[in-house]
Image (cartoon, rainbow, N blue to C red; front, side, top):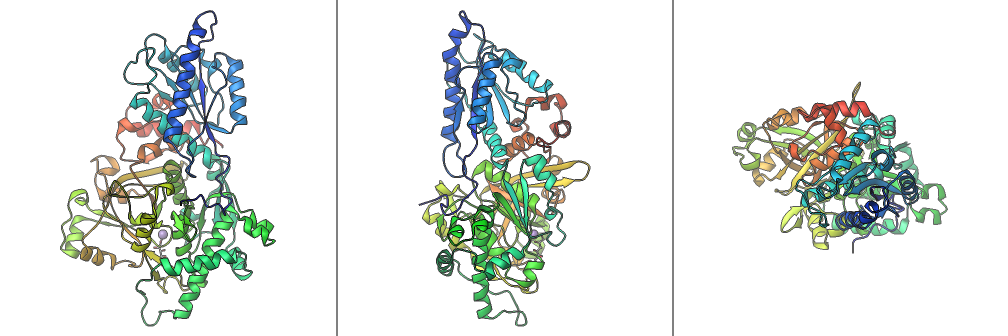
Length: 599
Ligand SMILES: C[C@H](O)[C@@H](O)[C@@H](O)C(=O)CO
Ligand SMILES: [Mn+2]
């Protein structure tokens, strides 16, 4: 049975809801009375659509709150705002099929992502209201997404057309992601790893753009908890036994000079398992620690995301974080199938944020990787004699890294017989077993990791649609997002081995073929790699670029590189006023004008 990990005090409590605001023409004496029923029905149908289609990361359906009355004037707007505050509403969707008084009925809360759905009918002017209220939102600096069906519906028709459904759900999903990360922490475990810029954790960015705080601990906290046995010892015994049974060892890449003794390797397993538990307790807290008298430690850091410095100070002296990072990000461990716990390797907080965005949009586990090599078709042929074709015809990007790749990234789960990475509640025991079987564990390369540790290795199955993304910070500009949709590819075994053996062959590999559009950064695969903003990227199952774009707009983070069709780019309506040709430039101007939502 999949669980939410009941032993943890996760951030999954009191989750934000979607508030639905049915707005109405305020004129009593015929008009308002005739509209009360249909407008409220529209609100209830929107709530039903959202709750039936969207889930929170804990697997529960998303909850909606509908205003107590239709909103025809400012008093009713205020009553609705009060109800939304009391009920932890994080996202607001206004719906109507008629004319209403724009600025009197609009949602003025500056922090809740907002959308307005104006019914496309002719009997009553819902679209006229939509245009009026969106103008108000633009004029007042409170951007809102507009939703308006393409085809005219008849007055009494309360079905929701597919294009409207898509927009409502895309908006609600992205809005909930904004609301769920707000008030949570990024837990920076350690400092800057090997001078990696993404690991220079920028607290202002987290506070101003994400509404999050940064908590920081020194890695001596791990040493202390290891030394003083600040973890649940019963759970540790169970965890170690599970690891021995389920984490098969593979070859040792070290030469005679650097091979570590069996006794040492066994110790490294023990430390690795303890570190995984300690990291979880640091992020979420653990009631078990309070029972042991460790009340302060039992509370955790309210972290929705963390990062572990590892290299070099920690890894020079102790087992590396690879097992901890890999198993934390996976949807299962000794406690069974459960929610992934997001953790960035090398404390690359900016890549961690990309993982967080994609996770909150999809509820699926993430893979963090080095964006290691662009293998052109000619280079692959030169080195291996193999000619790539199909989606790989333009060459491949080799994604590889120790650490934060969920084992789900092996692609061994399936949906309709095709490889997939699923939300934990859809993962079967057979899926889990397949991922564990496809993963071998190898002693870390001693030259790189003098303190040892165990690295996971798998090769991702072909045919998964994936989206790789990353956040970068540019001085003078601020944060920017980039993303690339594409597919996973497999190479024939001997070809893969030849390419893999030229790198670290004890790490997980994904061969990534981005979808080429012939434009901008997507002119070819080489350009995708060349324009990648840093050494890391994170990938998520599915083509979710459009969702990421909507989310980034809500956070006022411009997107400088994507391969999503223009028709699917969905941003607040005010963005159009910053330019309608060349949407990329308009996005930059809009984000600059509005600035960070919490700044
Ligand atoms: C072992 C090396 O230090 C790797 O960890 C290094 O290539 C990276 O991952 C850099 O991001
Ligand atoms: Mn790396």
